[in-house]
Image (tube, rainbow, N blue to C red; front, top):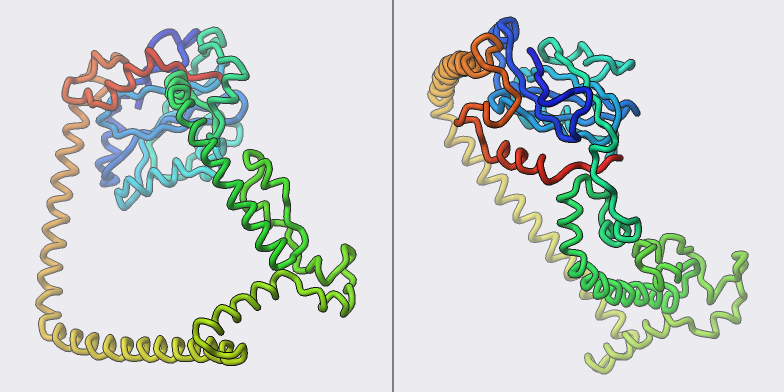
Length: 383
């Protein structure tokens, strides 16, 4: 396989168009290994040991590589696949990340001078490119970036993303103000319940008045099981005198029982017994319904298995015939796909020009047209 970048590799733009073509040995490998749904893997190895990865169908012909850093970098490429022909599995393996900067599965050697030999892939191709710092767009003012990027987990990667975030900033600030009022009320309510009613120590009141700096869970993160009504700060029991001063929790319990007494016309003890009977009756009914449902399920399942037993062997024979037909059709489709790839991507028969205008019209998808326009107006920021 060969990789052909557009422009001057010694002084390239932050977005580089790269085209690939296949050698006869690549096509032979795909045929011998019965490869299905192969993808081309492109890896940008930056000079700070970070990397970016791209996966594209072979018939896409070209890809737009967006560089995140100035300097001298290497780009490696290879055709990759798996034995099941599962595209989703290929994407998970090569795209899964530990965090925003690190991929879960290594594909580069330790020296970062090539692709590792393990995995299902063809022989790797590579090229080098230098991106001058002057070719990257100028960064927006720091104060504007703080406002526009607020609420996002990562900064805007290019000019278009920054402009999109800037356009919705007024709306975002409006809803942020509404959010601040609502979340402050909820946080104050939590502090009132756990710190005032249940009388627990350790409620963080800073998370109430500064919601933009603290998460809502931090209101109760450092909460202790000790009560400020019954325990001192060092954990010592205040003494039985504190029980005489009813904490708010018992006041709420008293109010609940008092309300129940007036509604049900019962005494305090009768109200408590009414709640206990309600709980026991609920458990009994739920348990009875669960047992009855289980019995019905077992009877229906046994009847269904008996009814299906008679036609089991005939169905298995039909399934085997269907599997054989599917295998023959898959082999024919793979061969037709290889012939089409050979005509489209052969290094010998195809004029290899890394530009959208040189791509066959049938391959000029919306994705390629979009990224061709984006490369002109959405330069990535240097990181």
